[in-house]
Length: 159
Image (tube, rainbow, N blue to C red):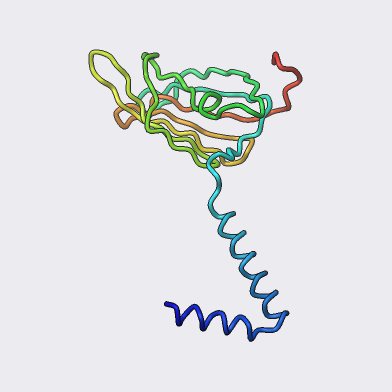
C-alpha cells in the first residue's frame, strides 16, 4: 500500500499545473454529481401555500363521495403533519409507524386497534412541488385516495 501511495505522489508531482487543475476540477464535478443524485430526505420538495385537497373514500374498486378541503401550508411545516395526516375510514385510532421520507415521497405502515387488529400502508407521492397523490390501504385494499394541488400563496397566517 505504501508503494502505491508513493507512486501516486510521484505521479502527482510530475503533472504540470494545468493537469492538476483539470484533475481537481474533474473531482469537484464528480463530487457534485454524486451529491445531486442522492436527495437529502430533509429537503422535502412540496411548496408552501394554499392547497386544495380532494379526498375520496374507496369502496371495492369504486371511488366514493369526494371531500374538498383548502389548507394553508407554511414554509416550515412538517410534511408528516401536513401531507401524511390522512384519516382512515371508520377508524380514527390508527397510528403511523415505520415512516420513510425522500425528497418527493412519504411512506408508512398503519396499525389500527380494535376487536380485529387492522394493519395497512399509506403513501404520498409528489410528481411536482405543486401536486401530489396519496393513498391509504388496509389489508392490501385501497380505502382512501387523495389528490392535492397547490393553487396560490397564503395571504395571512390565519388562512
